[in-house]
Image 1 (cartoon, rainbow, N blue to C red):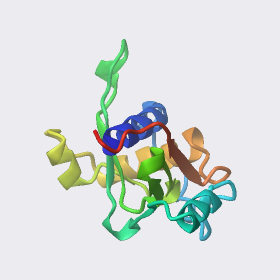
Image 2: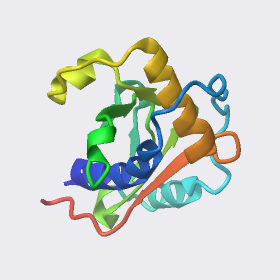
Image 3: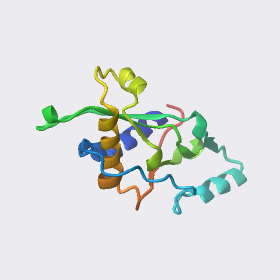
Image 4: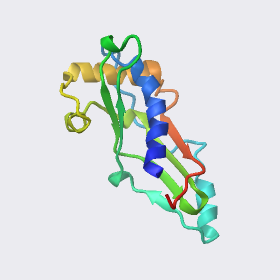
Amino acid sequence: MRSRALRAVLTATLLSALLGGCAPLLRGPAPAPAAPPADFPEGYYREALAQGKPVFRVDPAESLVVIEVRRSGSLARLGHDHVVASREVVGYVAPDEGRADLYVALARMQVDEAALRAEAGFDTQPTESDIEGTRANMLAKVLEADKFPFALISVAGANAKE
C-alpha cells in the first residue's frame, strides 16, 4: 500500500515534469545538494521514536523508485514514453501513524535507464544525447532544480495493515 501511494505521488509530480522533457540539451545537470531540505520534518520522527513509537528510516542505498511516464492526450503521437528513477530516496516511515515523509534530490534522478525501460515493456532506447536532453530540460525548465533541489513526498492516512 505504501509503495502504491508513493508511486502515485511521484507519478503525478514527475508526469508534469516529463511532458515537456523532450528537448535538446540546455546545460549540465545541477549538483546534488549536500543537506536535507530545510522544511523536512525530521523532528516529528525523533519525537515519535522518543515516545516509543515505531519509526523506520528509509535506506537510500536500498531504495528504488521507478516512475513510468507514458504519453497520452491529443499530442501523444508526438511524445515519447520515459522511465524516471531515483535510487536515493531518503526519509522516515511511522507505520502506526500511517505517515511517511521522504525526499529525493532531483539532480540525482536518472532518466531512461535501459534495464528499467525493458522492465517497463518499452521496446526502444533513446540515444544518450536524447536522454541528456530530456533530463536537462526536466531539471532546468520544468522542475527548476537549481531553485528547488528536492521533491518532498508526504504520505498521510496510509493503513499499515493493508
